[in-house]
Image (cartoon, rainbow, N blue to C red; front, top):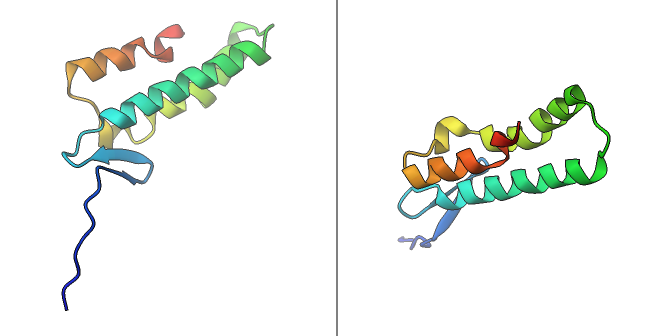
Length: 92
């Protein structure tokens, strides 16, 4: 009995997105966009924050998205590294 496997362009495993060539470009882009979204939510809803409160919100909401499963999808391409460094993590 044979079973034909389905070919996928992208696959999400434990929250990390890989393409058919095991690249994580889409994952990096999604994480950067999510981090920017959370940063905008913080800026919009918490207008009068002291530095300590901002850092606590930033580390729990923004930075956690950029660092989740980093050992799995750690970028090695210079373009992705540059994009991640431009992301909200540099807004500290």
